Length: 330
Ligand code: UT7
Image (cartoon, rainbow, N blue to C red; front, side, top):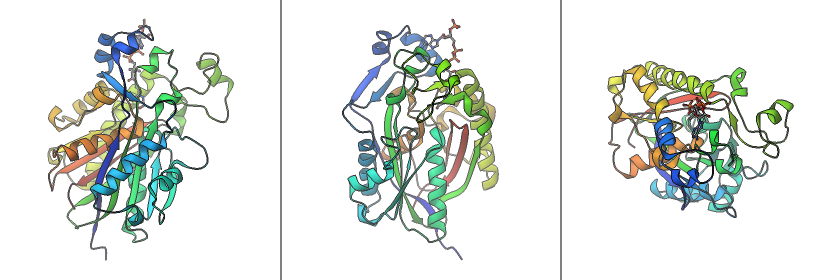
């Protein structure tokens, strides 16, 4: 009989110092602060320096999460890193971070579910802890999207930023922790958001400017329509599975791709604005790091109280989506 819950023991984040504002972007492409704020809600984003490897962000977020959990790197049994822009295809980001933080007892591997990756990784981590296989799992979402953005394309370059967020998961009292999870994948819609890597098709070339074959391309309106639907359905499905209603939820921490997507999904479900955690005006779209960075901000600002019901929800490339409902507390 399992007599414990699986919950979040500590959180951390890292945002690079370099900031790119909407007015900086006005000097780079044919755009305006007014358009970006009205169509996305974004005001600034943080960018990695060219000479900094992306995994350094994840290592710093990881150190802070381990400290917040009251643990040492040697206590970590497993590291799962969510990333869609790894520094290397091998070694994995998880092994790079393991080495950087001296987590010598940990097994380490990456998952790629694009912007949904943190929710996927937390779901995997939960299984390992629930079965008793591992005790402490570090989940890091490490995303350096600026490395794959076409900085001459106003359709995408205004949207993305760099960041990492991390959590340590472990055993908590039975009344706390993760209550339910939900994951879904739609490979038939994958062509709507692509970042070529080791293979570039003719279709990939046609969608991009010459010399920009390895940049992010998306059909913004197709992804937008999917996103509103997927976010609303993911929230509804996970709370139904947990046997609770939207009124029981204290805080929703959504993927931060566009304020209109968050508001559109919330409107479908009748969710009040004050129950939404929104950080995208400060960060832009930081892919799978959105949810753990927002979670860390809410945790450190003490907005989360013991016993609060929290929903984490994300969608993204793949296409993918997923959600987690948990009771905050240890
Ligand atoms: O996490 C990854 C998942 N990705 C997403 O969630 C993205 C989902 N999609 C979106 O958030 C929105 O579709 C965008 C923000 C990408 C685009 O917003 P939109 O309101 O759907 O704009 P649109 O693509 O329909 O374009 C409207 C107009 C176009 O001009 P015309 O053809 O009407 O003359 C665009 O060329 O806005 C133009 N436009 C811009 N204008 C100024 C597109 N980007 C810009 C820009 N500045 N940066």
